[in-house]
Length: 519
Image 1 (tube, rainbow, N blue to C red):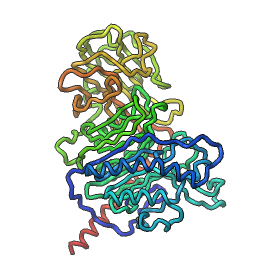
Image 2 (cartoon, one colour; image 1 turned 30 degrees about the vertical axis):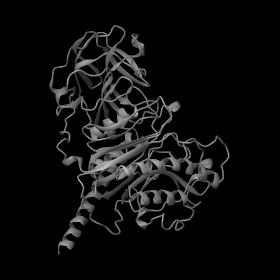
Image 3 (cartoon, rainbow, N blue to C red; image 1 turned 90 degrees about the horizontal axis):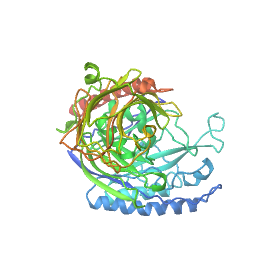
Image 4 (tube, rainbow, N blue to C red; image 1 turned 180 degrees about the vertical axis):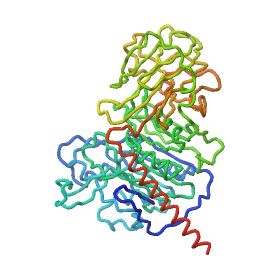
């Protein structure tokens, strides 16, 4: 494992092994888990009771891991919070935590379970990986003692982290990642700096982060851009938010926008609107699952390119504003109106006709749409919308969004509200925008919250267009842009430079080692 934390500008390499990927493809698995939750309590349970609950969930995950291995999967990702749920205080989560060591210690918990104290969950996960000859990612809680003289040390004397661990096919701990961008998680601490965690396998280089991390530059973008990972492992407890941020919609778009494989494993909890997992390649989803009708978990498997950048299907480089900035804007309709997607105020214009060319702008962002409907349904209204600015109530993330979406009713005040079904089919659409960021994620969401694999493409000039003719009824077609350098309290600029420095050092050391070997 390679871990680069922004606490230091020099990586600790230890013993470095050069890995040459021997496999062009591999079988990946993700498991969407219907977690067994603890009883509500304001006082901590015993360690034994905490272990009992976690083992109940592990019993289910064990069946999924064995099933994946029986179908020749080489790696499986399980969700965030899969062992114990999410509603805790700092005190009530503590019995569920274990001390997770740095993977550079070279440890196989299955063979030496007491080396780092009481670690029954780590030992069981290690044995599951070893006994089934499969890489396993699990999300558990880490506790790290701290000195009470340290002003940042919590009152109980421990830092507590939302943590991903990976065990290889021999049961060895090969990677550990502490989640940086927490979302309503008072039970956990934020690491001092983001961690950039990678590990090499015979089937490519992997990186990982957790849930809310995907919306920020670090660690997500840096892992792909500066550390050149082939595949991201992504455990999540994602609550779907229409129209732009359902799990399958945004995660598949992120994989396409970043040009990387994404193995996304979500919690399954229908009442909290948690559902939707998938194995996403840069050019199209390989397999995905969205089900809010049952309370059942689901395993997904697919063959994936080990090095997607070498694939003939790898998407071309895109200049997201090339088309939109060179054409003459379409006529802006007089009846442009304002509406909200959650707390973000968009400028909207209605698609009045069966076909047409429209432009809507907000500040410097102009969104252009050409479209043709098969037939305009009388009881359905679609609009083209534009938004640029800091997002939501917290106003931390800077978004640039162009979207064509169905309104909830024919009342224009409902445009932007969640809607799950549609009847209107389009046999042509082309969406583009004058984006000022290179990070844009293309989304197409169909009726009943389904994706559209192979039915749309992004052209090198930044247009999102349909292909292969008539679409299924559409909920949204969007270009979701993230302008990271304009985020409130942005860390991306400083961290990117450090990451680049690390990459240069790493490359030079690899060249030196290669020269030693060749000598």
